[in-house]
Image (cartoon, rainbow, N blue to C red):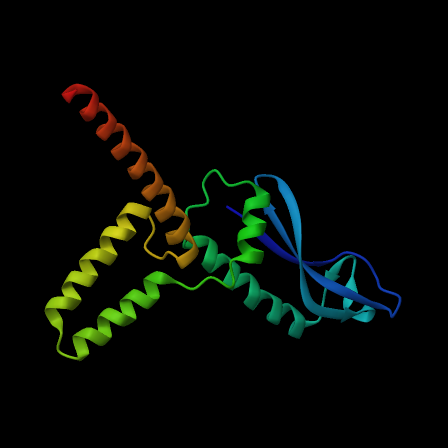
Length: 165
């Protein structure tokens, strides 16, 4: 479980402090820089006293917690958690898209097809072990699965040919 805290690290030449989010995971500490800065008069012993900045940064922390709670982070180190929080913003949720598409089909009166799509979506979610998954996970997991399947089919075909010759 990752823990978050709003903090500052060093003063700039213009007498302001850049705001960081301290991430602690498995007794390791990392920092994520935010786009916020704080005047020196609102910093006491490394803690921020400006309620507006604290509120804004805690909204971002809440989004980070929500994203981390949607995936299984067991066995992740701090580096992987930090990369996930920093870089996974661009990825689109395939689960959300699929559910919206299925709802649209049901509203259009295509209930039978919608049931089939829902069954396929649930199968993919159970295979991946996550209710909410993104396109990039589907792509990498799908390619790995496809590659493994192709390898086993090649091995089976070569064994079958050897036995019939």
